Length: 285
View 1 (tube, rainbow, N blue to C red):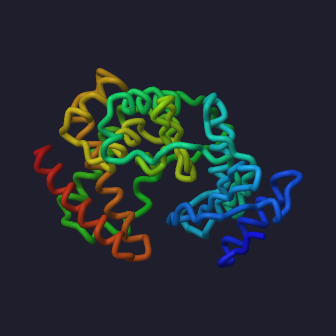
View 2: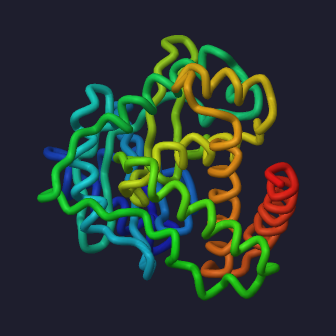
């Protein structure tokens, strides 16, 4: 019988047994820690019959809205090959879903044209998800971390709000993933199947925000891969607009970092964002 090493593993095992019919703890072969996210712990649990599941144990986060995530999980069912959620608790954020085979895209994958084709096609489907006012999906709040603006030179914060003001008047919002990075994707090379996961931050937002989040995290700005992706997604997107949105994304990530526990990874990430902010500001002026 598999044994839990901590309270989170124990909770994951108990939740799986509760959710999946006709299994008990003796049917579990192994449990493996998958990821330590900022808002959850995830585990891959394998049964003796080789069936695998991902069990996510939600953590408390003052900025996260689990009831919004519940609405989002219903809406993404409009996409035929969305990931298969078996159970979700809108209070705790606990989730059980089927395991998806594939890889988390690395440096070689994010610069592969087949992958970029799949990404563009899937992102268009995400942004095309239909919703109505009664769905009450949250809008992304770009002002939520305003209290941390004092940590950067005034000219950089002022330009952030100037860019936001420009786009708020001209670009309509769509359904967005809103945490669109390679580690929230699973790619199957043989089938070229791409699945987006982890929709807990999904909001209504500018569609460009998803695009530039990927460009930022994949580190492909001002490369042929950025150009290729943008042309595949929308040939009419101009470079200046994308660069301004990239600035918005980097600035938003910079101030967000002050809301987190100050792990070494967070402070290192913040330095990278500050460097990008300065480079992009210079590029745009």
